[in-house]
Image (cartoon, rainbow, N blue to C red):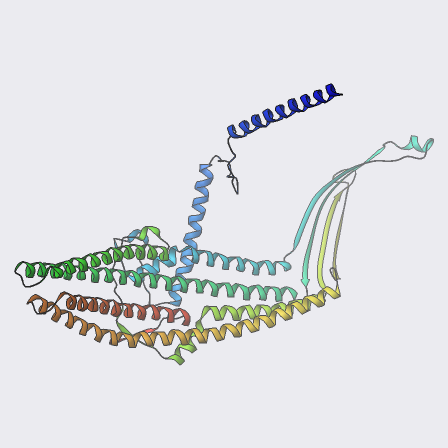
Amino acid sequence: MKKVIKLLLLCSVLTLTSNISLAKGDTQKNIAKKPEKIQIVKPEKAKKVNKRLERKKNAENAKTKHETSKEAEGMYETKFPVINSKIEYADINGEVTLSDCIKLAITHHPTIMSAISNSEIYKSKIGQAWSNYFPTLSAGVNYSRNDMFMTMGGSYMNAMNQKYNMYYMPTISADMLLFDFGKTKAMADMAKRNFESSRYDAETSIELVIYNVKVAYYNLVFAEIQKAVYEDTVKDFELQLKQAQAHYHIGKKAKIDVTTAEYNLGNAKVNLIKAKNTLELAAAQLANAVGIPELEGVILKDKLNTKAYDVNFKDLLSTAEASRPALLSSKKKMNAAEMNVRSSKRAFTPDISAFGSYNQGGRQIDSDYGYQVGVQLNYTALNLMLLKKQVDEATATYKKAVADYEMQRQNVYLEVKSAYINLLNSHDSIGVSKLALQQAKERQYQAFRRYQVGLGDAIEFKDAENTYLNAQLDYYSNVLNYNINAAELERVVGAPIKESDVDL
């Protein structure tokens, strides 16, 4: 018994030792094995480029871009005749005006190209609807060989000289809808309204691009002004540092004045660096708004507008209701939904169509011929329950479109009112900030003269300089907001607003 127990223990020890050895071997293999790279989507294998096909594709894309650019140019010149620029991207010589940037954006921005191409999709659906009245042609050739199953014998079988029947049968047929009680016309009218709605959506895209270009252009002008203001501030603090050092050397000022001047100059230089970075970012944003990344680095000819706009809320609202593309698009969608109700109701009516076919063939290709012509009145897959529910769906869709149009009309009122108030607010703020700028400039001059002759101190000069700096930025910021609010008002109205001859 003891021998058996010893033998079992020995076997268990040997088994445990072998398992540990195998586990170590597997661990070493796992460590040695290179882990697989985890990828969400495996990259596609590189394909050989067909240069001829790529050239053809690029030529087609260039042609499409040229056509859509002409279409967009015609739409925007009709909408905004006051913007008249004939510049092309190849004609840019380092300087651009606001009108140039708008013209370039109209002919190059991909958003406008996409919107116009989308309207072309809806335009094709009008023809698809009217195609129901065009004839449908079909043609084919049929050949068959039939192995006849014979159940009779004797003399009858001997009389049969051919066991197989072979037939040749070319066929041509045509079907044409004559009248469907207005179903096709209702579908075409609905497609036309949707197309007109898409055209207004394209106009909305154009106006949004114009607004973005104006905002980016004005922001870049403001960034240039801001950079110039900080450069002047650095010069003022450099001059103050020289004055402080001169006063210190002759014993009129303490060392703390020199240290304070150095600290103020350092802060001014940091602000100048930030202003330069802001200028570079504003240039990139303008290039993006125009749709030409290579536009960075151009010189802007136009400055911020300081002419007052002649606006009246009632006139602006009536203009918006007549020309705002988003509102007109919503109205066309409402009309299309109404046409859909009419089309759904007319689905209960039958179709009157003509048909005809011509067959020729037999044992030989010219053995015989036959034809068929006629007129038929038919219902296609008539399901009264389904048609009734489709009418209910169309009616509910129309009610929703009516509510959406009313909501859009109210939004137009609110947007015009808000833009009008913002324009007036920025207009009034310019006068106040202009007066504050004049006062701050006078205070800064007096503080500098007092410090120059030794009557003032560094703190007084710093406060006056910072007040003048903030007054400049505040004034130009209000002018910037005035220009941006004017651009926003033009966008929500859907038409340009008039400038007056009055300077702000």
